[in-house]
Image 1 (cartoon, rainbow, N blue to C red):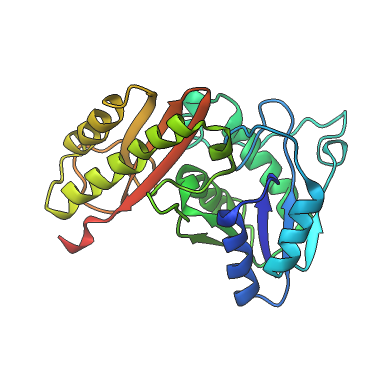
Image 2: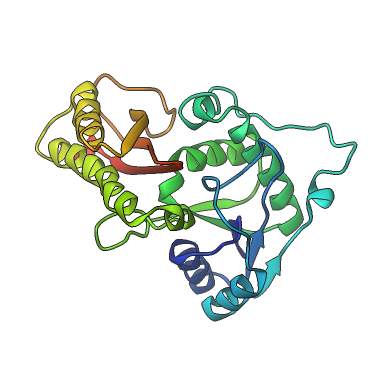
Length: 261
């Protein structure tokens, strides 16, 4: 059985995960749950109410077999005390910018995985740090679930599909293209032989800070397995950015792999 965890307000990126899961499994469960307080998971804060009817119709058209819509009281009863932390991976990047967020992710995902019991879980590459953390959690807790990471779905101008994009004005939406432009510039430099992580970080920073409507939260070139910031890229790495466009925070990344050169 395949499983796709979401926060609702479904978009094409999440629906692509459902279709991939359906193609590779006999049945697909899709959950929709927003954790309380600091324990948001799987996406940036999103504007506007969820439309459950719309989401259910989209899931049906994408081939989902079961929609799992747990209540907060079910997953977090009043006497709930347990939290799950992946030491060394949940404190930097998103963990530093949004304290408690990644501990909330790991805690709720353990609960959801135990309740759903899938063979495979499908997540998008856009949430690279979360994928690294969850893969390590699955290994360390001997959870027999395969994590399948699918390519980021993008708009025609490269911006990663996200429900957070709906909160951008026309001008902000145009400004947000600096995010993919920065990542693509780092990828291009890398493909042309640049291996200095500092140079790659500078390429990304320069492009983002040149956009007046963008405010850089962080820029990173880190080891793809440990998330340790690199001096030189000698193996699989991740180029990652988090950027504020107005009041909307967007994240994105591109994998870098030096194995070929």
